[in-house]
Amino acid sequence: MTALAIVTSDDAAWIGSDGASYTEPEGTLRQVVPKVILCPEWECVIGSRGMGGSAEAFRAAAQWSGVADFDGLLARAADLAREADDGLLVLHRGRSVHFTVVLVGYSRARRRFETHTVRTRLGLAWSQDEGRTVEVPPFTVSEVPGLALLPVPPASTAAMIGLRLPVAGEPFSIANPEHFVQLAVLGCRFDEGHRDGDPDGRRFIGVGGFVQLTRLVCHPSPAPEGYPGADRHVIVMDSQITHRWPDVIGEPIQAMSGCLPYWTGEPLPEAPAPQPEEAPAEAAE
Image (tube, rainbow, N blue to C red; front, side, top):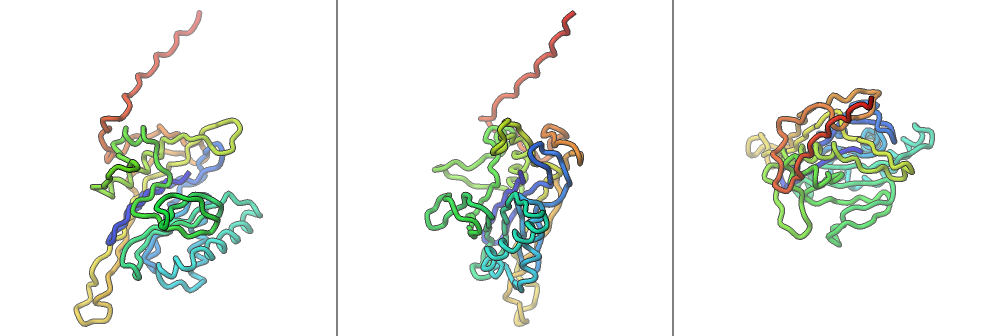
């Protein structure tokens, strides 16, 4: 399970992500890699969930197709996802675990940062027309408004680390988007949801390696007035690792290993009280 948390506004975007690539269903760490690719040529970031290498395959397809900017990337996103999927199927000899491409970038046409997703199989996505989550066919480009949590961390875990999640029908605002997206990734670290289709109901953890924070910000052009491009905003992007876990390649990811990062928030009032550890049973004589 890849954790991606995204907050966008007209003039900035913040992305939190983890760095664990693992085998299923046991959750053995295979490698530690970034889940987002910075693409300054298109003023965007490409992220992915699911099959490893999908973001890279999508970007390679886009580079060969002559895409010039983020708007052009969105216009071709469905076809590019199909091309990436076909290439990965050949590479993996016909085996696919499917993937979702997540595109976060600046639309010159609409003058704002946006988030869009493309899935390779039937699934749920946000519908702008209906204002809710609906089921969409494979290779449908769907815009996600403002806040995207992929996945949403468990409410109890979120409260314990000081993360307040949106509740349907209630007002919600984010005072510090940079802090919010990092906490959202941290909260997913402790989500032990059952793996779909696992008859034994085994649990596994798929968030690990590190927490990565990526920022995209719209700035005025540094060109003097009257020069070509003086009225064209400049998109500045940067990325950093803000926390690392001691996950070991070749071993199962242990959610409780390591320490909490310094930026962990104080528990919310509704957070469950910590449970005392049980005393070890005395050995029978």
